[in-house]
Length: 474
Image 1 (tube, rainbow, N blue to C red):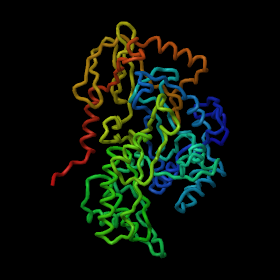
Image 2 (image 1 turned 120 degrees about the vertical axis):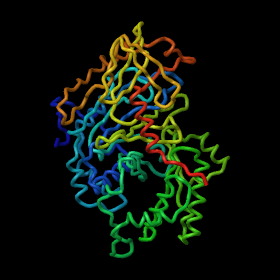
Image 3 (image 1 turned 180 degrees about the vertical axis):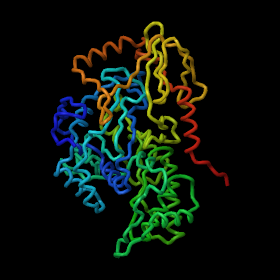
Image 4 (image 1 turned 135 degrees about the horizontal axis):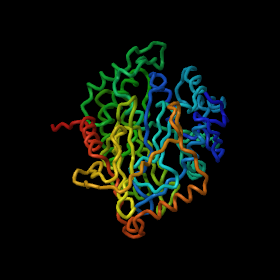
């Protein structure tokens, strides 16, 4: 393990710490530590996971984006270490008593076995294409810092950012990410199924079975709500009270009203006092217009999670980067959503940029890691990830692989050097000069095509159909 402040990463390169002293291991959401504890309790904390970092939409109404910030990520990873003061603060923030062994585990965490593959800084990049691929233990915390202090002054109740909580004393709140849900494939992965009753020393030896018994009694809409209700009712039976749910996509007004009806129905049917008032929180890029529309429609939302639009102006909204689990223990994972733009592209991938006769980039294509790379002069089928009719053949005159290794972990792979700022700037200028003018124009630019190989397309849709629930008409 590396000690805090080490100037050497796993590849032996001397890399200083982050430029900004605010960038610390606590620069993350609270739920990353609550999830880490659950992974540790379940014995899943060391399982190998693969995450993609990408964005869904270009900013400013344009059709391209410039990638920057990689060096700061590598600086943090190369010097990652929780201090005793950090661990003491984390212990004080967690709302459940955690075993001492978990904090001993946190003391030993570094990123010596984390692998990072990324597109070089200064490159022109496009939506859905992974900017970075991070491979390592599933329990590694991650996240970012916003204008938490000023939002709190302006009337917000809490922040999810741990560093802001420590530095400014702002109350911390958090839920969990989708990766937490999708990383558990079966109930057998829950090692410790016991739960002590709140008001007595007796213990429920199989809490999971208690939840399943409640689930069998519930006949409600097909969604995540029955699962929550079953867990909440089982907790209530042992003397605990579930806090609430978070809605993060879909028709927030309709879903909140449906959820409230279900909660009220359960309160009446099972005589659970106060269940109808279970808290409903809504998020998903909320802004003033969204809140106004919700109020006009009528809704049952009790609280809002707002970030992006709070600290940015509409003319220059934040990029909206996401960090999604795409593989765990070599098993591909996919996030499904009613909003197709939020469906993730599963498995570990390679990315190539295909150039045409005039040396302009034609398309970026993602392939499975084990697929052979596209070849110059070879006719290649490029498919839209989700729309069956959008496809085209391309015969590239030049092929460029985009992801490079910048942190090898324990793999022994050769790593790319981190270039100086002037080289990054030069790369950016060259990349922009390579782009076709119609992609770069300010008004109505031509969309740049991002595609997947035929084999990856088939796999995405196989997994999609396999994981999506089958509806039932009554």
